[in-house]
Image 1 (cartoon, helix red, strand yellow):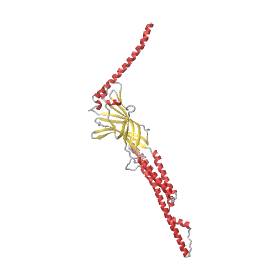
Image 2 (cartoon, rainbow, N blue to C red; image 1 turned 180 degrees about the horizontal axis):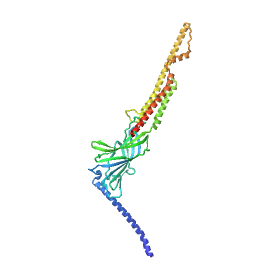
Image 3 (cartoon, rainbow, N blue to C red; image 1 turned 180 degrees about the vertical axis):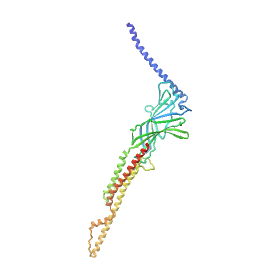
Image 4 (cartoon, rainbow, N blue to C red; image 1 turned 90 degrees about the vertical axis):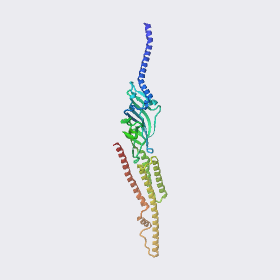
Length: 416
């Protein structure tokens, strides 16, 4: 009995080890058999150049469903009229040549994805693009046993975006991601995209813009070689103008207000008023040139152009007002001298005629009487203290409601 127990205890671990090894070998063999059919099919495709021919070649068109997930949106540049996007592009189609008896799917990645045919999708109005390859090429293919193929790739692209800047910086812009086939027309391949397969985070932070909504459009493009399917995603953005309020609008308002201080400076203080006027004019001019450097040259006036031009006009009018006031000071001094000269002449004539008729007014009263019937520099400054702020306030009352309302109407019309 002791001998039998010893033999049993010695053989039991060996038997258990062999059983585990046989089970693992069976699983490996089964997996190999399951993937052998797919591997054979892929090799047949390569040997027969099947990877270069579309499914159903010579037959009905291949139907490709697209999906897109936006990972991030980069800067939307008004100067170059483009925007950058990093995204996951997903493509779904059926290739009956890859159908097999396997119970699991096959994954191809890296350079292996070139073993099978894939749609030749390209982006319209693309300026530059790249496929991400850190740490490996971000591209893979799932092949299901029924021949369904799912491909995913991650890429970044800079796409052109035509912008209308009439209401800048109170504007909204529409930028599009357009995809089409480069070689296959609708008789050979059709593309289709639905909103459910487009994933975009509406809370995504974009420099100087806010993402509003998107719209999916499926259409065809006609060329000499035929009609081609096109899938378009229209992205709606609204510009955030807080930065422009802090860097353009508020400083320009303060400069216009500073220019009004010259109305409280004596018109005879020429250095002070000239320095203040020229300084404000040059500052507004420098601000205008700095803004224009960041924007493209267009043939129409933008909202910010009209604002800066109005501020420059008000500041320049303040400088002209001083020129007028200084001229009135000169005229006033001439009239006073002339009045004094006439008064002395009358006194001499009265003394010679021994008819001393004293004037009704003293010299000061005479000078005031001289200026009552004429516009003086002081009166001009007092009028300007009231008229300039009123005119600037009227301009603001017209400017802001007009452009803000127009901008809101444009956004509403895009979604109707």
